[in-house]
Length: 220
Image (tube, rainbow, N blue to C red; front, side):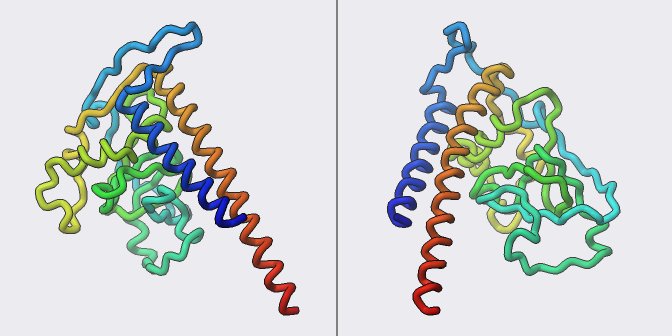
């Protein structure tokens, strides 16, 4: 059952990637509730939609966030993260709010990360906040697409050597800016699919716990 469940999850992930590619390459024409096609997408530079946030107004009482490629920004305590920090260094950490985006040292590999948590992170990271009204989940998915990661890599000029993608660099890259209603519709479709994957992952974890329990009982 575990092997079959793993295959189900991997298959859904492949389908999710294919769906994202078709949507963001506009191979799927989505329609509104009246059956009319949405207008063609507008494009704006990253700097027109997001600004570089540098809020350090905290008392070091917020959880420190780890910026990961697989799970976005998550509390360090929730993963095996052994790097220790001093109270003094934490003072310079930036505040991350729920819905913020983070450019990390590995964004050229895995895209820009999204935060589901409020916390603080190293000042080495660039925190992006939206300047205008957007559907944040739309950009959460777009920033992880193969096509966007290729754009990040297009003019790297040595950034791979441990250098951060700068806000100035990010701000010059064009981003899709469909009307808000379409952003919401696309985000809803992809979020529903993602939730389906999460349900299957929880089922897999249940099977794994069940197997572990049965194995333990065999040796009691």
